[in-house]
Length: 337
Image (tube, rainbow, N blue to C red; front, side):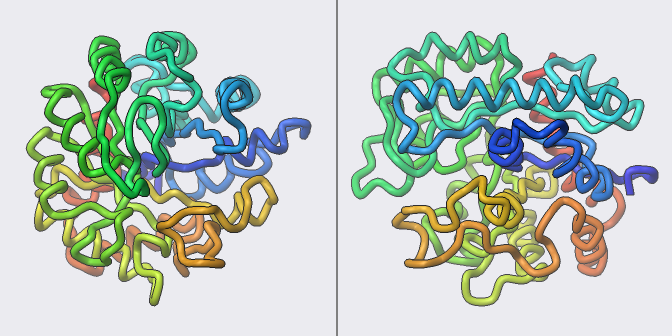
C-alpha cells in the first residue's frame, strides 16, 4: 500500500510499552513491530509515552525517560527503515525515502510531577504531542473518569501556555468535558487533536466524543483520530464495519478534513505480558480485557482491510488520503515547522 499513493499516519500506538518491557532483547522494535508497520503502510507512527498509576511519582519519570530512550534506539538500530521525527525536515525525509517515521507524544502529565517547566526537557528529547491525562485526575487537569469535573488547575493553565509557546500539538484524548473545552478556549490557534477516540452518537460511552465536542474540535481545525478498540467501537458487537460507522459519523459532523486514524492497537501488547490484561477503570466493564481487538483490525498489518472497507463505503481516493494521512499531517506539521 505504501508503494502506491496511499499511506497511513497513525496518531496512537502504545508499542513503546511492549518495546520497553522487552528492552533486554537485541532488537525488540524490529522484531515485534517494524514488519507490521511496514506491511500496513504506516508512514508515520505517533508513539505515546505513558506510565501506570502504580509507577508514580518518581518511578513515572524514570519510566517515561526509558520509553523515550527506546524510541530513539528503535530509530538508531534501523536507520535504513526508521527515522525519529522531530522537525519538518525529518518528516519530509521519512516520507520521501519510504522510511517509517516515529513521533513521540506523552499520554498524561504525570511524569512532570508538579513542575510544568519540565515539558521543555521532554521537548528537547523529541516529544511533539502532549495529552494531559489518562482518564484520572492529576495535578494539571481532570480526566474523564473522575466523578466530579474540575477541569484545568492553575498548574494546568500554565502548562497549556507553555505547550503553546513550544508549538506542541495538544492532544485532548481522555480529557474530561471541562478540561476539553477549557483547553480549546485557551489554546486558541494552537494545533489540537484527539489522538484516539470514537463518536458517542454511534456508541454511547464516556470515552467517546459528543457531537458538540466534535464540532468544537473541527472549529479549531483539529482532528479526531478514530480508534479501533471494542471499548469505544462497540463492546456488544465490535467489527470493522462499526469502525467505519464511526468514521462516517465523524465526517458527517466535522467534515472530511477533520478525521484521521489513531487505532490504539492493544491485543499484541497485552498478549506479550507487557500490559495488564484488565485495567482498573470505571469506563471498562468488569473483567473486560484492555487487549480485546476488533475482528479484522487487530494490528497495523490489518490496515489494508480498513482501506478496503472505506473504499466499499464509497470514499474517493482524495477522501482516503485525507483520512489516512493528510489531515493528521496538517496538524502535526504545525509542531514540526
